[in-house]
Image (cartoon, rainbow, N blue to C red; front, side, top):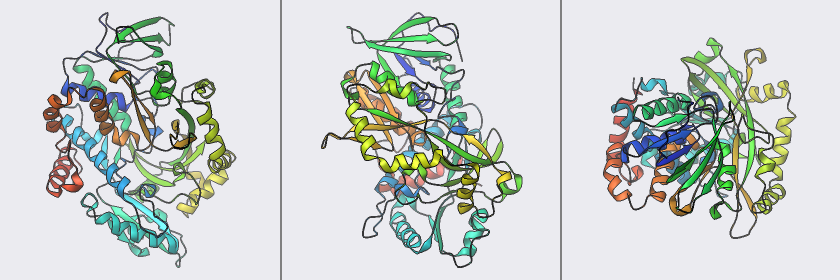
Length: 497
């Protein structure tokens, strides 16, 4: 990664942020527009240092196989799997593109960034079991979830998730689903591999370079002002297309761009902690990712999960998340990030959320007041025989949840997801929000191409379909293509056996 100034010639494309989103967009541009000049600016000392870093996310490879908040039940008990199907298809798109890159010579083994780990959804109680039965029936009626297993047999579950079952009362009602084809993804390793391949093609990736301002020029180009975080030197480059994929840092830059499309948008930063163990005995006894249910009235970010992780060749378990609050928009950000983001355009939205999200406020206050013993008690509700001495605390990355104005009511609403903002006649785009985020990066960046370059998509489509066979089609509507895609990606990404 270079820390020298960008080439004198202004690039066709500037990507702000050295995370998985920018890395993915750079990779897609390498497929459809390899002759375009591309420059990346990252404010940190290395790429993948914020949300894409493996310790800053759950690495679940979100495919909606175990995340119960993607399959809500209605008042009559009917489970809606529409969101789960969409997320599963988006992750399948990511896997197809990663497979294409591996076939094209992406450096290293696929095992450097993706490994097979079963995904388990786990509940307790009669109501939980009824929900899980309905969820399983609704999901397995869809081709993309074929093979999802269900059980409410404690002995079977003791084989699936020994740590979760050991020490539970014999008469406790339990139920679970398991997807044996789940994965763990090291998005930090993936991001570094993608940028490495991009640099080999001529993409310029610069670290220690903070974008401080963006302005639309009279000629339609964007003037991007960059400051070297060590020397303080400033320079400006001009570009035809600007993508802001700077995680929590995206909102302030989109505000500086003075886009009409960003009016009313705000950001609510949430920090997080995980409990981690590297005990070989515990890790060997838990070879899965297990997601439970959030407490009644709690936000989706509170869903408890116990994840097997493979990071830098070492296995560990992470349990959490324990949410917290920090005004920083990035882990390495400023305590002034939140107040600086409040403008006349989004003040009403921010105040509206402050009034309506009292449950979230109470939840965050409760999380902030938790002691180490309190966190351990939460863990033992999930892992009954957990010993406090086996677990340490890991600080996760910052997430900035999107606040936007509801056009119907004019009130501010908090949304848990991602939001693509496109402005300047398609010459600038930015991504806001969080989960499922990285897992659906390829779909998100395909949307960037479609919305920002609509006049080129027809010519690009054959190239995209070669890299992503399901591009423009729904796998859930085409079982034959679904089977072909799964077989190919599992073999190429070394997820079999």
